[in-house]
Amino acid sequence: MFRSFFPNPKWFFSSFIMWSLLCIIAWYVAIKGMGTMLSVGEWFGYGFPTVPQNGASDAVQSAYQEAYSRALDGWLYQYMLVCFGLFVGVWLQLTDNPWAKWSVAGSALIVFIVWFQVEVSVSLNNWYGDFYNLIQQALGHPGSIKLSEFYGQLTTVGVLLMTAIMVAVFNAFFVSHYVFRWRTALTEYYTSKWQRVRHIEGASQRIQEDTMRFASIVENLGVSFLNAVMTLIAFLPILWHLSAKVTELPIVGHVSQGLVFVAIIWSVIGTALLGIAGIKLPGLEFKNQKVEAAYRKELVYGEDYEHRAEPKTLRQLFGDVRFSYFRLYLHYVYFNVVRYGYLQFGNFIPLIVLAPSIVAGAFTLGTMQRIMNAFGKVEDSFQYLVNSWTTIVELLSIYKRLKAFEQAIHYEALDELEFETIDD
Image 1 (spheres, rainbow, N blue to C red):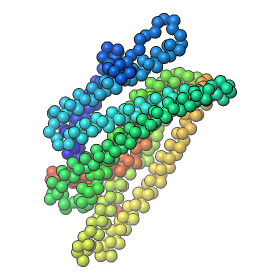
Image 2 (cartoon, rainbow, N blue to C red; image 1 turned 90 degrees about the vertical axis):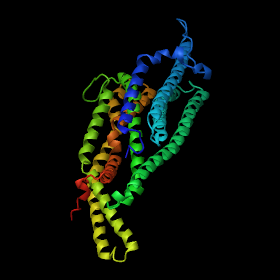
Image 3 (cartoon, rainbow, N blue to C red; image 1 turned 45 degrees about the vertical axis):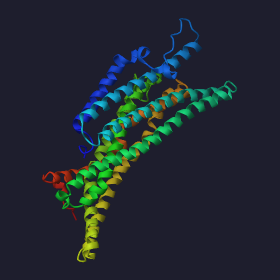
Image 4 (spheres, rainbow, N blue to C red; image 1 turned 30 degrees about the vertical axis):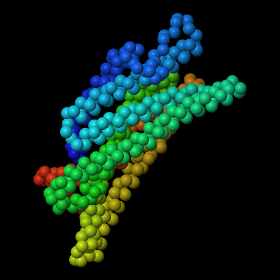
């Protein structure tokens, strides 16, 4: 499933993780401070500014901080491009996999875009604070701000969002091609072994449909996981800093950096609840696909052979399909009760946690919006399994089928579940 597309998957993904950690550590230990010497940002108007003299006005200090932050972001982009370029270049030299350009360079591009989208989220979070503070000032002190300031804030976020939209459109287009290339690699591999697997129930479906679904779902889950990790890395320090403004929590009172611990505890509770509620779903999805494949196969045979697909046989096979679906629907009832109940109640957790601080007037409206947004981002990152559980269930079902498929290719005994019959 992976070897047909990725060069030596175990080493490829392991090296990616190790290289990423090394690059992150190097950035914070040494590279970050080298921007003033090595950055080429000056060529594009993003050079590091001169440090203002002691006693400089607040306006000068603010302008310096803004220019320095912009230059540091530019230096980070340069460093990221070098890191990605080295990783991709080395792997392209080490492998002769025909799909390496797509699997190695394509994966690197997707990861880079995910990181860029997280950076956009951080910028939006900062904008929320400034914009809602401006609104609070305007509503509390009429005439204290100019209309140009208000429109200026909207223009700033408009430019940011337009850039994000263009990148998202390009990413969607590229990912579609990426997934289809992965499907092509899987299809070419399986069709070359067709004589060994043609006897397996639903073999044609696995090559025609499961390969596409597997590549698409794995890419989707992988990107979501990377997004969750990068979002956590970006927003956890922000939430940690903003938590200092929260004076106390309901019931427990004062807790240092309490918002971070609330997000972690609430996410762990949700993951555990959904894990217990959905433990049977992967096996049931797998059995459901088996009976669908048997029904579809009999109908296909009926197109070529008159003695196949008789009404009695079709009624029996469709009865298995009906039983399988009804059983699946029943199990999804209590799973969805837990899932939707948890997610809906979770929308009120930030407000409940912030209630004492809001009543005490501990922060401004802009700070509240930043806290709410940062809390939501951190919570969503920790809730990766909660948000992806149904997709993971579908993936496990497909994986079981393709795993049995590959075992047959290598003349191995099929998993016993492959031969398990549907109970009446």
